[in-house]
Length: 310
Image 1: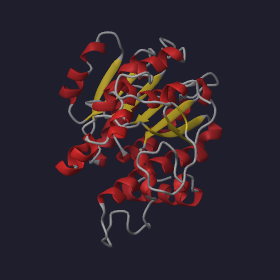
Image 2: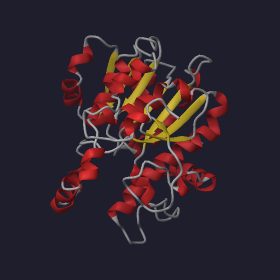
Image 3: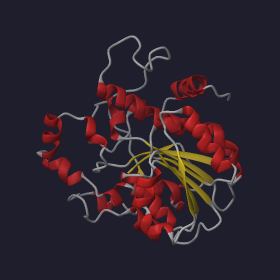
């Protein structure tokens, strides 16, 4: 059992006893210990990305941080700019060309990367293929490279569509099913990375950061938001942003995970397997979370969709 399990038994809302991302760095003994290592984090202009970058800065790693709005990201991270080695790179996840340019910018300055944290969503998929060689080169016997994919408990609603219906071309669009598909895709990517590259020292993890006020609820109706605000259990489960980034940092540096990946994490621990009940509040993984056949299919289809070779 993870050393952090007890703190998550009885949540009392943001700022309770659950660890923050920075506390994970301290507890794991990584403060100042990643000097000379390179970490890439996508989506650092708001929410969990800011706290993830702030915690990684404490490790001493050299940071390459991507954001659509560089001014917003710079303002959000102003308190650590002077004490950290970091470079902000513009990237719009909706544009493959923007992703390519961002990757080329990073690779022009470093040939070795130890951490890739896909905080900004599934459109970080091209990053792996473009940064794969650097991630493999950045792995060492003391600290093997890691890719961290932010998924969600929302993945428990369902799996992925057929190859000819990822974008609901055949109709039947449902916003929660579409969200579940994108979050299952995050899990599948991590699993497939582990299967393909784990033996070469490149490991991958997917995780549920938990409920945090990141602005992701902006597309919900006022009725849905009011329902959430009146849900006492949900309010108690909610984390502060610094707590919401804790499982990401746990995946990135925990010694408990060294040398093994393909895991779905929740509350700074390896998650248990749950039932196929669609419970979006559960921290357990769904039965469809580990599916080698569909993981390989999605990997192949993803490369074809973005025009990359395996």
